[in-house]
Length: 350
Ligand SMILES: Cc1ncc(COP(=O)(O)O)c(C=O)c1O
View (cartoon, rainbow, N blue to C red):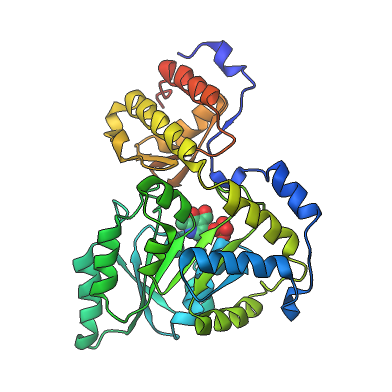
């Protein structure tokens, strides 16, 4: 039994997602004084500056500021596929499982799914699906990867493996969902540009660990980004004085990348704590390289519910898979509190 005192604590350690982050004071100041214009006319200098910056960081010819990561992925699908095409992707990737069927709805494409339990795609499975075109199976228009790969626990791609995949699929487009690309880069030391070099199109989110209030970036060749601009408009994502948001995005890129290593350090501490508290889960804490702790447990939802009652808020990303995410709002003191909670915690048997 847990002590009653724990139930009455008003502590709130928010490990649900890095999307709960708040804009920093520097972002708020930059937003207040941002120079803006109508981006529909291409007249917003702050949006231009952000797009130019991301294009340079990724080594791509051009970039586009979009309202969300989902829209960036959906634009990639719109510019790289035709109705009836196949996208090869990992079974648990965001573009497959967490976008409400958007690729089917928006672009009339279907997925061919491969194993991504550990984050990377099984190369032989990818190549078999492409090879099946010879056997009268649908055209594979693109391959999609996620870096870091959220459901496996924020796993960063090994650059050589990603290069091997990109090389093996040849001219076929590769889309890189880099919602947490900066986490991957900080964890591995691989530059954002080296990761992006493997891909035809790349997106990154500003509104997760980087703390900007809104927005993602999409980059690729000038021709693809010009088409992406049209698709953004079609999807209702063209914005007007969006420089107010882009200003926060620029501060995010300038000031919030290096500190992600702190989130990674705390996540690793939490990984050790959760592995110790739930040995039956068989979770290997050394698999936690960035800011996400995720593991399977038969009582996943119950654990999340009961820990929430104790002020430790996480979530589930699949029926028996729990997830806890660190971000700038999670302190060393919070980790210590989680340690104290987990020391006494046992799920109530039901
Ligand atoms: C891997 C991945 N891709 C895309 C997205 C979508 O980003 P947004 O919430 O900005 O639409 C997320 C969001 O959590 C994500 O984790």
